[in-house]
Length: 117
Image (cartoon, rainbow, N blue to C red):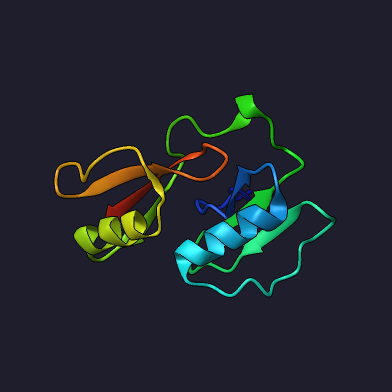
């Protein structure tokens, strides 16, 4: 029998306190429209290339937020990405580290990362 488990990540769930506000914030920083449907009153699937992101207000609790980045968003220019996030007023946690990445927080305090790949 071959292994039925694929070596792929399908999606990452991010705990958020308010699904509408989280949808708007994430779509804004990603340059996406907010016209997708909120599913079951607590899920929003962000249209991504590759591994997906699902915002989920049902799993939110202050002790469930990401205290370390569980994944990173890609960029082709880390300096432009840093300035873009700074201009948007995003809560930046680090400066650009090793000319390669920086960390920031979403409005719920989830720690996230942008990395030049």
